[in-house]
Image 1 (cartoon, rainbow, N blue to C red):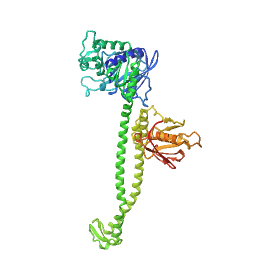
Image 2 (image 1 turned 135 degrees about the horizontal axis):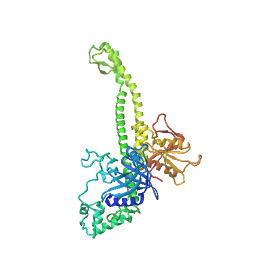
Image 3 (image 1 turned 60 degrees about the vertical axis):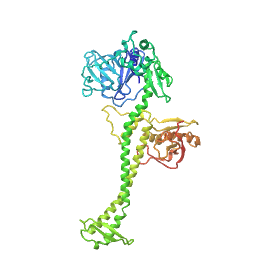
Image 4 (image 1 turned 120 degrees about the vertical axis):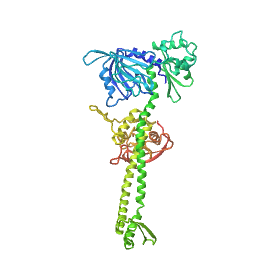
Length: 556
């Protein structure tokens, strides 16, 4: 991805014209390596987004509203203390580097004006966001602390004098003139000119007058006349972007052009990163749930083995009976005895414990038999409970695998915390946890009726037992983890036609673990026949009077 020095220059030029003289109203930190600044400018309020994520570091304006944690992180609180209410005096790029600087003026505790600087280092895995004091040159704090153990040359810690990253032995692209002779091939251009990405180097190499072409790009960038472009594949997944069209992608990708570099970057990263970010955030939960499932399956295996042993315990009762009937034939201290089975006349070999008397050995066999019979009931109860836990976690895993929204992951994490599968995260005093609000999916069918679909197990319970009426139809994949789906009935006496039922069932199949399968069985029944057992896990129900249809997963 081509967030190079030229793109940084374009961002700096755009921000210089938009947010200079603006006032920072609010600071948020949606993730540990992301910041959002609400800035009041002369032309209205704007949101500046900055990320120090190793895979997607960037700075640009955004229009979307990002979800925030219930309690602000420590770096966010420090920024609120130091720069909330600050006036932006300048936005600039450091040389030809991928470093963006925002100069600020704010008031200290005594009411005196002080100057500070936010420095955004957009350098892949070395990306960082640093707040410095201009007068002393010292770091106030940074979003990632770099100690001497990590980097002996350059530390980024509070109180340390800020130093720029070491300069590369390359010609900065801003020092190129009309007389500069650039190498012929793209790799040599990239090795000799600082701030040039591979994609731009390819484009420069394709022109005869390479220096003039690069100077023209810089002129367009400074005057905000460039045409930022995103190239996407057949699945509409962004592959590359730059402030100019890239000829190597023109014939093989779909392109989308923008009138601002910020809109280009927001489109690229929101579409490129949405699946990656969701997958990244869900991976931890998937690992935790999968680990719990592995433990439960192992427990199930052991319970079944114990149950099998307990069910084969009739020999213990027989040994006790035969010993009692043949006590006179057992020698004291013997470790075994052979007696006649008076049920069928066969000879039975009975192991004995030499320490105990014959009668005591008989009592021990009866005692073991009694324990085995009790164990059968207990193991069966444990197996039933273990099966309900497996079913519940299977449903959570299905939601995580089908998840396409960060807010859904947060709700699933909260659900796992509430049910005790994850340790509850501490929220600092004074900050309240956000209340759960059910927001099910809603789909309109061909006949105008609509279905509601739960996004998680808690939402399933609300949907089935609070939102739905008794005459609505309830859908769920048969023996497959999935969402509760409610088909709203317009009139109590009205019965939906077969096509409507098949459409609703297809939605239920789509929002299940069988999404990628065909001919998925789906049960449906009136809501009044769906019950929730006492102390059942979220989303776990029982139902009767159901019918089953087989459909292919599909949304209307």
